[in-house]
Every structure is written in C-alpha cells, then in structure tokens.
Length: 478
Ligand SMILES: *Cc1c(COP(=O)(O)O)cnc(C)c1O
Image 1 (tube, protein in one colour):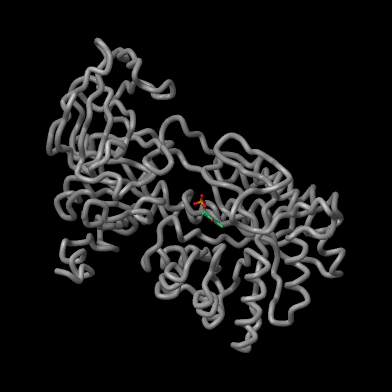
Image 2 (spheres, helix red, strand yellow; image 1 turned 90 degrees about the vertical axis):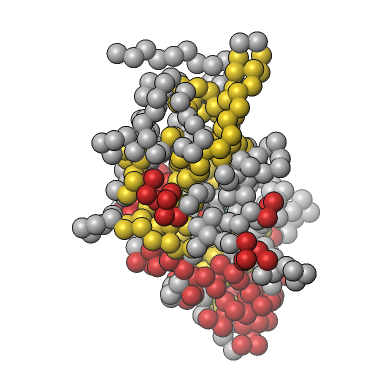
C-alpha cells in the first residue's frame, strides 16, 4: 500500500495529494475519457498520443458522445420534472460557450434549440442548419442589422433588453411587414454563483429591465416594457426572461429568481388582462473543473425548481408557464480536454524548503483565457503514459509574455514529468475556444471531435487549426 505524501503548504487547502497520479476523478472526467491498459489516456477509445501526433498540440479534443449525452441529460431532466407539474420545457443551448456549424448539428439532433448572442453566432446557427424558429437572439446592444437579420430569417424569439430596443425592433418589424416574437429580459435582483446567491431589490448591471418600482412611484421598467410590447401590433410578447449568473451548483438562486419573475408575471397578466405564456430562467448551471467543485445533477436541480415553480404559481393563482432554460457550460464544458506538450521545467524554492515546479506548455492564455480573466482553476494529468515517481506540486504555465499566463495554478503532477510529455487539461469545452485569441501572433488550435458510438471510434477535425498564413492574410502590409 502506498502512503499519501504530505500536502505542500504552498498548495490551496482544497487540493488533496493524489494517492494515484493516474486516477481520473469521475466528477471531472466523463466516462468517454479513460486510461487504457497501458495507462494512456484515451478519448472515446482513441489514445491521446495518436491524437497529439495527428492534430498536434495544443488542440481541443471534444467527445461528441459526451456533448450529446449532456444535452440529452438536461433536456430529459427538465422535461420530466416539469411534466409532473403540467408544464412543457424548451432547452436552448447557449452557443456563446462553444459554437461551430458541426456543434449546431449535434444540438439540433438532440432536440435542443440554440441561443445566440450576436449576428455572428446567429450566422453559425443558421449555417449549421438550425430551423430559424428554434433560434433565439440575445444582447444588450443589438445592431439594427442584427435585428433585421433575425426578423428576415423568422427567428423564434428576440430577447429585448431595453425600452429603446423595443421601439427599434417594432420599427424594423413594421418596415419588413412581419410580427416580431419577443421575450422581455428582466433583472430580478438575484445574482447566483456556485454555493450562494445574493438577492437585492435593484440591479446595477448593463443587462435587462429592472423589476423594481421607482422611488417616485409609477411602473417598473420591466412593467413599462411589457406594456409597450403588448400595445404594439408589430410585436408578439412571448414571455419573460432572466439570467442570474454562472457556475451555479444548486437550485436555490434559480428558485428565488423564478418566484420573483412569476410574481411579476402574475401582476403583468392581471394588469394586461392576458397571461404571459413563457418563463425563461436562462443558463448558469455549473460543472466540476477541480475536485473542489460539487455541482448537483441536472435532475436534482430540475426537480427542486419544478416544485418551487409549481407552488409559487399556485400561491399566485396563475397557470404554470412554459419553461425555458439556456445551459451552455454544463453541456459543452465537460465534453472537451485540451492537449499540450510539456516544454521547459523549472523548480523554484518559494520559501526555504518549499518548492514549486513550473511546467511550461505550448499554449496558454490564447487558448484558455479563463484563468487570467476569472482566476479560474483547472486541473491536469499526464496523458501519454503512466506516472512515475511521487506527486510534485506544479504550476502549468503557458508560453505567452505575461507572468499571469497560467493554465493550471496548482496541481500535483508526477515527479518524472519531462519535456515532450503530453498533458491533458479537462473541462475546457466551454469558453476556451470561444474566447481564444492570437495574442503573441500564436495561431489558434484545431478543434477535434471524437465519436465512439458505432463499431469503431473516429476522430475528425471540426475546426482546423490556424496557420501563420491565416494570420498574414489579414495583415495588409505583408
Ligand atoms: C451566458 C448566458 C447563458 C449561458 O450561461 P452558462 O453559464 O454557459 O450556462 C445563457 N443565457 C444567457 C442570457 C447568457 O448570457
């Protein structure tokens, strides 16, 4: 029996010293990512060294099966939980987390709709073959061109964000001779993240219309918006939308937001003499990036939420509305890992007797901006072989000219890690490729999809990596 080594005082408290450096934590690694009999990491049955050889590093490796399974899990969990309270559910995949034309096909085939946040994302959704009525358009500052594009194609909904935008959408719809289906985005005063939520009366943020009644009386901005949409024959008001945060682990924050928005919907319905048919609670469902993260399963969240929605609607004396949700990260995040090749290694004596090993890899903040942007934590494993030696507290860093260019702040990696080894960083499927850049003139990595369903697993490029030529193509001085 091996004994666990003592934790380094330099490591954060949540980080345990792994007993087995080859182990893949099932909370972080979905079943499509496993080690084979030789200790080599495989994705959908394909060994990582094969993928690294074929596609190079860095590269984003998606398990298509995992992406689809996560999409189905959310759709089934919410559909079943809300069916029990007599309500229907639509699931909109939040495209901003990761969107390509191929991904649009997966989403569509799994019976989800798609949420877009710009004309560009809308173009991808359309080109990927999504039916326009299954596409939503968001944004706090949509251009007239974006709104026109949405109306021209007959999008299922435009989520309006301000009184000025309501006028603009109505004007453009009238010009085109169409009726615009809209949802009003409100700010319910609930901000949720991970284990807690904050509930306030007012909101100090750029998105949405406040539910709060102004000091000097009169209608809340949200109520003014609903009234404006209702009187305008160029608009068809579908319902109310809110989005309360990201990386949320349980149902409490969603529940409070739902209660507030339902109360508003009851008031608006009574005032207008017509019920608002739909409640959209947005996205924000969390995933495990490290062992410290403990998101609740979709089914549990859906059931808790259905219960609160049913009892709130009962208290308010309104019918339970059609429910929509917009998960992004929870579907795309766990579906991918990023492969890197190890380069320079350096050990620093931070304090007498306390060492940290810096492991430089061939990517960094250009392919994963989240650690720099949000202080996000990740983990990593040695992927191309079994570990040798004990656990060494390591920091995986990129190759960019910034000392903040960190990929994994704290992780125990094997003592015998060496240049040329391949590292895999899990849970990089959301907001990594989507936020990637060419900082330092580094071409963006390829995106590979692996599918194991069927007799033989197959990997294919769904976005090719950029070349230096791609970058020069836009430099007009060259
Ligand atoms: C970002 C966003 C989402 C998706 O958030 P996730 O945390 O990826 O689930 C959904 N809806 C809206 C309006 C958003 O802005």
